[in-house]
Image (cartoon, rainbow, N blue to C red; front, top):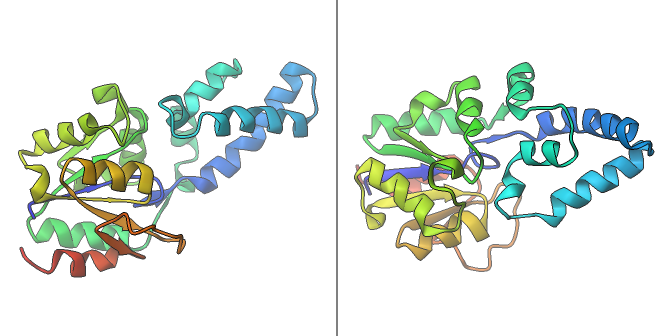
Length: 214
């Protein structure tokens, strides 16, 4: 193997503490704007979010802010509350090892271009040779184009690359569909339906998957 590609959210970091911080702000603004209770504002907002799950728009918080005409920008929330982005403890040691071992490293994310800002704010951007977002290709995982674009920029064939992600439908299916080795990071102990080539609970287990071949 020559390259290892990663998903971001749920794989190398989590934005959940940040989301839990700003959602109450969203509900408060929405309730005042629409003249409804915060509970009803919450229901309306989440109904839109959940109703678009796994679509192009679902991956962009700014889409939902615009949908409800809210004066919020996710980039500003990231910069203001970047300390609420939590890097998993196995992320940096794993990236350090992979880089020292000579692997090319990349990110493939269905999120918009602010994903680069997210990586920069937490100090992870420098580890990656390439970062491909949905805005670079106009599509999201599991479409082949987003993976192939990253591999082309790295100069690597699909059979020479591993994709690591937490989504069976996006990361695993998409990678396997073009001939990459798919590694599912299952931090929560969910059911895998025998889809991934490998299933791991922490990124430390990538050493076993890659077999020290470099």
